[in-house]
Amino acid sequence: MHDNVDISRELQDTKQLFEDLLLTQAQSGGGGAGGSSTEQKLTDVATDILSKLPAAFDIDEAVEKYPVKYEESMNTVLVQEMERFNRLCGVIRSSLLNLQKAIKGLVTMSESLEKVAGSLLVGKVPELWSKNSYPSLKPLGSYVTDLVARLKFLQTWYDNDKPTCFWVSAFYFNQAFLTGVKQNYARKYTIPIDKLDLDFEVLPVDDIDTHPDDGAYVKGLFLEAARWDNKKMSLAESLPKVLYDAVPVIWLKPAIQTEISTEGKYVSPVYKTSARQGQLSTTGHSTNFVLAINLPTIKPQKHWVLRGTCLLCSLDD
Image 1: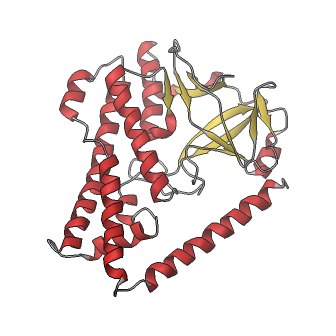
Image 2 (image 1 turned 180 degrees about the horizontal axis):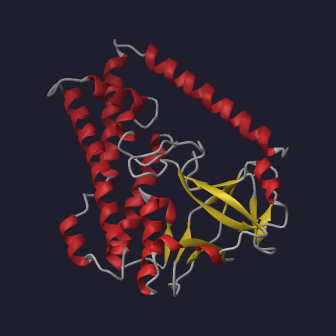
């Protein structure tokens, strides 16, 4: 067992301890002189978050600029992602505005607003937001920063056309993007999409400024319980005290299923968060598992299975 396992366990115990302490603090907080300071803190937090949220995407303009095209499925992916993030930001924006009104006494402080306020005070993402959000285990501050970065990614895509390398972790619904990659290939070469799957090649670069002939370049994944060795172009043991390792650019290459080989490779699951668990959604996809990526390895697959090695789209901090 790797030494990093003990570090991971102790970090989890510490995180749970602080969450319990914050919960206790929130429950013991009362009125009196502290009431006004609590209300001011909530107002400041709400104002700060609202100031960071950009305006909603104009879907009509997006559809006009990126219309549905038979040969380019990414247009549809972009517009649908904009719609999903608009809904999420709408929930966040309305809850914060209503909370500010409730603090001023302009509207009733409902039970849902009280829960939002309680979460904001202890730096947690409110349950109301989580129900309408992509999976995330980040605390409030990091969650907002991550959300703004995702919105910026989509805005840059809209302004400057399809990126040469996609930040795969930025998608609300990653599977739609993956389907779009295969769909473009299937339509280009008139191959039934159900006969295709994705093959993978890790490139020794952190970014790339050219489009591939087929497929897509992606970045933004992290290895847990392993690292990527750029010299050997293979999985390697984690360095001491380094729990996560950023993975270089990966080339998603659509190919006929029967032509894809997993020999000498570890079939690594990709999860949206480190929870490694999810629920089956109405689309038939897991809310956490994204796909499996074949990574070259010198050691046998069993070694990495016992290590619990996987790829993550998002870290917890």
